[in-house]
Image 1: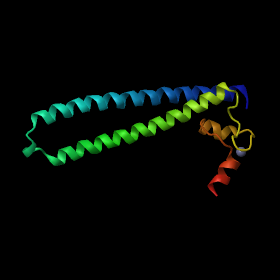
Image 2: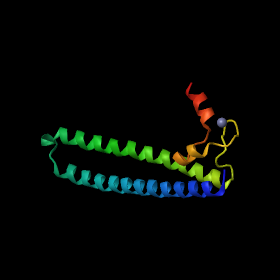
Image 3: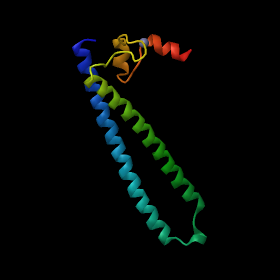
Length: 124
Ligand SMILES: [Zn+2]
């Protein structure tokens, strides 16, 4: 793979990394704030008049954030692996057959680890 394509992939990965980290930091901060809010609410509420439906909404919102966070973490790990492969100079090599991964495939998805041929074989 040529130097330009490699530099482009690196830039793309670094950009994605920043965005993912930003997204993660936003979610974590929000979670913390919401948790504090919950504590305050629970303290002020009489358990007998506690609104169950409100609790359900808050729990599902929390679940949604958790799964979003897990999703971002998986993506961040992939991006970091891509950057690692660039550092080790093995970026763009198929981890199955060792051939070069098609540039088109890499520019669409710089975290791709295997070539199109191997990816198709896996799908079968
Ligand atoms: Zn391959």
